[in-house]
Structure formats: structure tokens, C-alpha cells
Image (cartoon, rainbow, N blue to C red):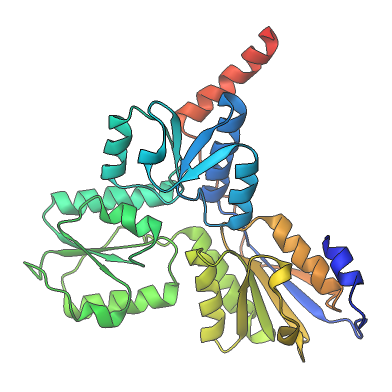
Length: 336
């Protein structure tokens, strides 16, 4: 059933027009666009099946769409038949996974976000220089698991200021920290402050690890939180950056909910609400946002105002295997 059809089934017609603040930037970041493009181009160039280790990005709609085109998502490379193509997700993998792929002679296409790769490189660098490494993040997140695998012997994961108290390191003067790219800016700031208090000589990355898109979407939420009665975030529940947007709003006293689509919106959320702010996590497609806009329009939120807090013009290049596939495609089409 379409958005319009579901609205038309409602018996209570909306009254006075209410406001919907559509935040920008929202939705796909450059790393997500790159990862999805890699899978789509691989399917077109090489044909299905194309295996993908883990969810290419943390969004159900995207994963299901790519499954429909022939992508096969697996939890481990051991599930991929020997010699087949496998794509690593945007969240990155550990050296152990890369070694397992080599043993199985898999043809690897790496869709790791370049900003995640940056953190991996930093982890290797600090470990080689003899530092104890503190990785700020969520222990069970795919990105943290991959980064932790670069230097597991010297790395400890912390997810809150309280956990900093329990850290034990060989040399308190030789400690470095890194962060997951999709964390809350405020929460990460508090953890770093606790680390600096515990280890005054601690060092960190030259530039922050939290990605530009995560930061920009959180800044946009902060800009409008006081003007909205409700914030809705389009994103899947396993999306770290999407969950952080909900937390940012709630920490500012604004009611907020994470939704996969307009179908998750509960009627009671809208009671007494005159202004809704709408955004989307970095792995949520714009089509889902527009469905929410249409649905809320049918509920009386017809005064749609798009608010651009800051522009985003970041683009990442594709891996060589995909660039070569694109280059070969026109020649192949010509000979057919």
C-alpha cells in the first residue's frame, strides 16, 4: 500500500496546517553512496551472485533492495564459495578477515569507507610506535570490531567515561586514543576528557575520527531542537549514527524517535504536536524521507520548510576493481 493510500484510509481529516522542518544535510553520506554504488556496479558488470560480508550499510531497505538485484549477504567469508567475489562492507574488516579471504582465493572488492580506513591506519601506526591504544566506541559494532582487529593485543574499547576508570595500561605516559566514526560528539567529548584526566600525556589522531556526516547531522539537530515539538530520524535500529541523532535531540529535551519508514510513526506521537523536525541517518535513502514527508502532509504537516545548516560536497573515489569494470563495460557493449 502506498503512502497516499494509507493516508486516504484514515477517517479523521487533518485540521490547521502544521510545520515540518526538513533538515539538510540528511541521509546518505559519501561513504554510503560509494559502498552502495560498488555493489550495484559489481552486480551490473559481473552479474549475480555477488557476495557481501555483513550489511553493506546499516539500513534494511538498502540491503533488501540489493538482495533483490542478486547480492548475497553473509556473516563470514567462510560462507562464500572458493574463488567467488566478495565485497567488504563500509564498516571495514580486520586483518583476520582479509587473511581468510586470501586462503579461500576470494576476489575481494573493498567498500570500506575511506574515513574508517583512516582510523585503521592510525591504529596500526600507534601500535607500531609502542602505544597502548584506547578505542572509543561500541564494542559490538562492525566498525569497532574491524578496527580492534588491527592491534588487538594493545587495544581496549571504552564506551563511557565510567569505563575509563577501569583501564590498566603498562605505561600511562604512552597511551593513544581513537574513536568510532559514528559516535555522538558530546558523548565522545566527555570520554576524551575523562581519558585526558586519567592519562595527562595521552595523544590522539591529528584530526578527529568522527566523520563529517555524523557531525553535520548532529549539528543540524541541535540547531532546530528547540523549535520542534518532535524530531523523527529515518534510519534502521542497528545504525549507530541514526541512534545518536535521537540521543542528541532527547538530551536537549526534545521528544525523538527512530523510524525505518513512515509506517513506524505512532498516532500518539503526533498528539498536540505543531512542529516536527525530520532528518535521516547517513545510511538512510532519500526515498524513505520523502514518504515520511508525504505521510505527515496527510496528517496536517503541510508547511514544509527545508533548512540547510551547512552544505556537503564530499565525494569518494571507487576502488580499482570497479573503475576497471566501468571502463570495460562500454567496450563489451560495443562488441555485443
